[in-house]
Amino acid sequence: EVQLVQSGAEVKKPGESLKISCQGSGYSFTSYWIAWVRQMPGTGLEWMGIIYPGDSDMRYSPSFQGQVTISADKSSNTAYLQWSSLKASDTAMYYCARSDPQLHYWGQGTLVTVSS
Amino acid sequence: DIQMTQSPSSLSASVGDRVTITCRASQGIGNYLAWYQQKPGKVPKLLIYGASTLQSGVPSRFSGSGSGTDFTLTISSLQPEDVATYYCQKYNSAPRPFGQGTKVEIK
Figure 1 (spheres, rainbow over the protein chains, first blue to last red):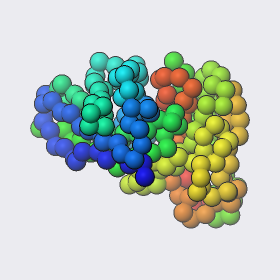
Figure 2: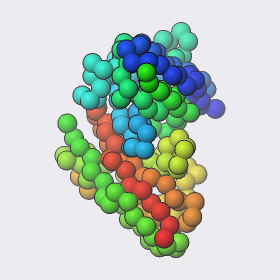
Figure 3: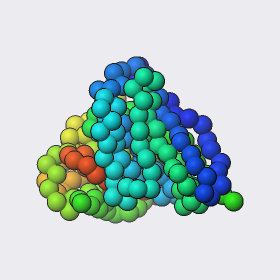
């Protein structure tokens, strides 16, 4: 069974760094792109970028380029999304999803709250 | 970059009604178009890919059509459990944006 399990909810202060994770199982993790999707409170889905864990090739949405870093660790079947300096506007639910290329399998989401 | 525009942004219809949502790409994307359903507080769910291929397990009242720049999602007979927000997404190349969503409610 294909599963994507994301790390738990985070509460951070502005300016802090953060790395959230998405661990895949039940399939060849290095053979499928993983996408990250943001959903701010009460708003729609925003495609942030994708990474191919096989060789760490990645693509970013222009809206998120330079704002976040996507990475992957083949040895642990885990993809990551990280921020070096969080802002209040980063408060959102973040989903990872396997890109088939349509997004068939989704993680359960990680809620990130940034507040002073 | 290609933009995806959905219409309407929301709609209210009666149980049993036929509902149509449209999605327009700012440039041609072939049939590289998926539709997702997101119920309140839930993870999005893939409904249709390849513009018209129904994902396994999705009720047959859902259908998709179109190619190039204009696409539609149709619910042939709206059911109470279809209350959700629906999103289209292009996936032929990166970036792969979603449409802004269409919220479907029961009248």
